[in-house]
Image (cartoon, rainbow, N blue to C red):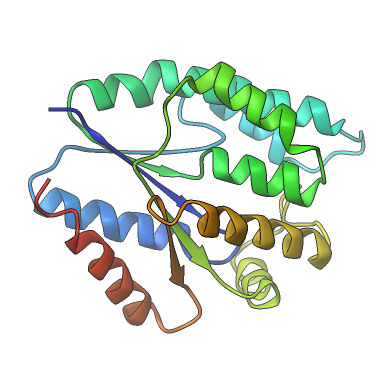
Length: 207
């Protein structure tokens, strides 16, 4: 039986890590094999590229170079981790995937979406997430949460306007693909957020 590919998306501070672990625990209690991974990253090469992408530096990284590094990491990730896990029937739970690229590079960086879509097809073929959980939160609230957590990385240091564009692209993608992308209100208390997640996952229990 083929596996199932779930991605978590959202701006900084929405609680992706906490809720990813919550989903993992629920799936494992149901007897699923769960592979938890992240982007950029997921492989030794991907983690090296992640470091290059997130570490603040004096040198300005060209936006197209940034985009190509993200898809280089994704190609390795798909080949080494995601596809093998899905082929053996595991459930793959990934912190960010290509929706993030459309949102951060297409929206935040204001790159034309055409090269993003071209690279998506080149690197992924027909592979898309089966389910995307979009944790949504007003930008100012998300950044306040994120900055209490740790020093900002290269993306977290961007201006509020950058993240407003990111959030809008995420919401546009959710509106365009409601069967795949499900918006979860991440503003309430954690138990309220996770109740929304439970309601969504209840629809998957019969798989």
